[in-house]
Image 1 (cartoon, one colour):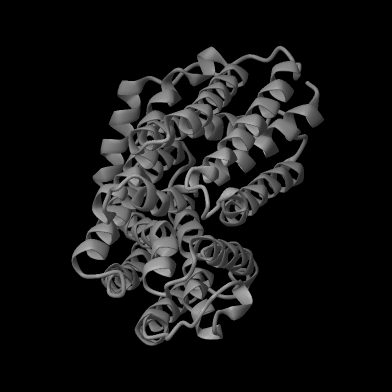
Image 2 (cartoon, helix red, strand yellow):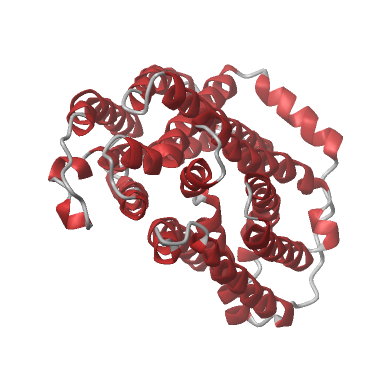
Length: 404
């Protein structure tokens, strides 16, 4: 196997999908401005992205090894390349739905394949950890870059100019396709596909455990918070802070950056401090930001804004919530998976994907509903409800896992 070529393809895959997956907030904002939809209608884009990820990630476990990881990745890249070009020519809310549905399906193929292939091109555990970390790092870079990339193509003079970004994204996808197509894989025995009936049976067995029930509710609540804020922050910046559209989008990158920093710091801190105290501190700090910082942001009297430097410091404060919510999801996954037998990890991973996708979809829908009916200045205050429930769930999980 040409390892370097495969690695480059992996990096390109995750990079382009990070931009596409996390551009949903930007497209929500553009859909309201260009396609005449309201906040609640625009929020459906989250469902078109997340539900295909959940469904396909679960179903492909039974046949993906049979068709081969390379073919699966090529299919995903081909689909998303066509979807990007179609978005440019379609230029409608319906086309945006098709785009995100295609991205969801393609990312499911890419993610399962990449995670499986990492083990085939690394020699030991250290190499595996290093490659996995670097790939996830590239993903976070792509998330942050999305908030700067789209404004580059945006123009007040031409409302359709932002669509040119999809030519670039299609180009990156095609380059990744070419790299992967010419990568020579060693002849290796594929693992037989898992029986779909057995998958369901394993998941039902997991649902019989209180630990699983509390965990999936916790994962659901967290993703509801994270995706709700991430998807609607550009709209919040535009409608509440009255920032120009490009600056509204770039300001949202602060959240992506703080999420990356928060996860890196948590990895160091949890080596010395028990996870329950790390997560409890994080969720309490996030709640305090919503209670004390958000009202000052909402009440901010914004003068003429032409660049990021014109924004008062308090305007940058609310996105710092990402620093504190970032560690929650990976630590919850680690705690619960560590408490289960390894043979149950596959089934639990399936549940994680499904409930994460459902949480992201519902979170965006709820925030969209609140933006429309309670006002954009009040919508984020409602995140205090799932945050409070999460705090309670941490201590329940601690008690349950300490018994195992």
